[in-house]
Length: 343
Image: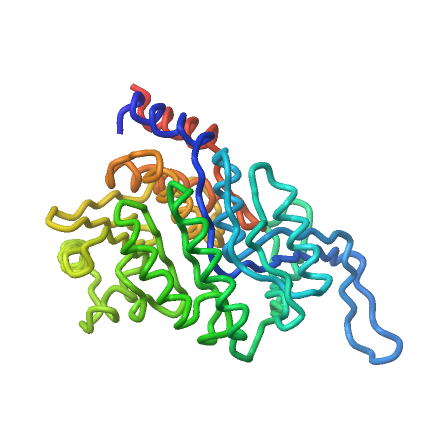
């Protein structure tokens, strides 16, 4: 990517509209000061004293946070929250970000707000240490009435946006936004909007999904194609091309420290190597930064190669942000891009 193309692509971000659809969660961090540890008089167990509490949107909200950092003009939220304190906190966090519309973010007493509570031991001069996480999830199927409203929201926002991101965060099938009925609505939207970038990522795999733009890792790629796991870059490129040709849509394969492979139908696959590590890293949020940057770049008219290069730069920035789910702004991207292209 040339400096001129970097500027041409990223300068369009303030005028873009992108929909983020899926499982929005609340990430709550409890910062523990070990110097203030006590022993409970009642139980004799250690007491962790929390000296700071911070919260931010997680799950699909992490993708949204990255889009906000990029300066995307309008971000349409499609998802649900519970009618609970965590849901209030999540919605407040979403609405605090510029350009975010929660018109299609449903509040329902029939669901709990997905919450990830992350205790962190924080000591001066040391990398924060995360203790056992406490998760709050839904364990029953998403009610049909909510499924129907979410599908209608997807049909409403798709024609008015430049890209759609769909993220399935939950582990238990049918308990989040992405249900069988919702996938049928997604199929219809994709068929009605063939030129619209629709980037999909699922923790449970994309095997049952309609043909949209798939993002996955190498193990998920092998599983989807019914093959032994591939690891060599050339094998991954061939498999990615096979899937892209089968779906008729682009495919993006994330390879952690080896970068990203991308394939489009009828074209050779591209491989963008990861950037060298520049110190301690925390990989939490790196995948979501890739998703956001791919979608933003494609919505702005970037080529597949350009989109992947921007995503690699963004992930390199995010992994060096410790103790939080990081984001990368256009200024951050520009600084590292200029450094990489310095004579």
